[in-house]
Length: 161
Ligand SMILES: [Zn+2]
Image 1: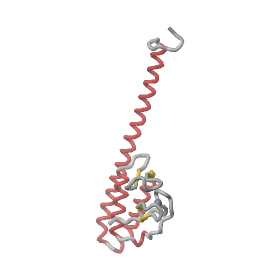
Image 2: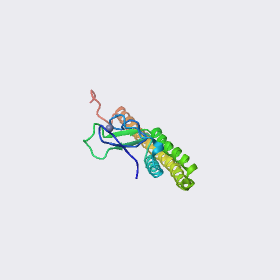
Image 3: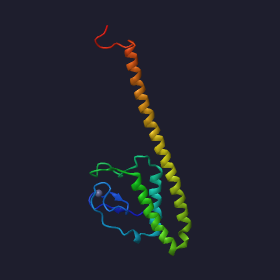
Image 4: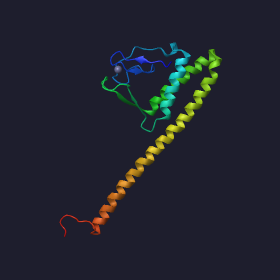
């Protein structure tokens, strides 16, 4: 089971790494990450890696399940924040491996997924940037064409017959 911290104000589910609610910024009841079960750590770490894989240069968007219940039901987390959360869980798991070598395999798999996710989010970012550049080139191109056409007298310009 993934571990969650329910906001006492808005009822949104937050990851235990957060000190304040992602949605309404209310301070959450502190969860000592070191008290989480290894299963929860693995689960939450995997969750953040999954989010990272779907991130672009902007970061990731998180929405609460039901709309209208919360003051703010949508937040944007930066790539740095998402990576930071993955790192926190990975470090936590690394310390667990010392006392429980059985976790070694899981840690390795998570590290591999993390690398894959980083590659993915880089290519997502590239695609978005390429798209924006193309859009700008397209708009500037159309504008230039219009100006040129107007200068050539191919388009009705105000004041001229
Ligand atoms: Zn809240």
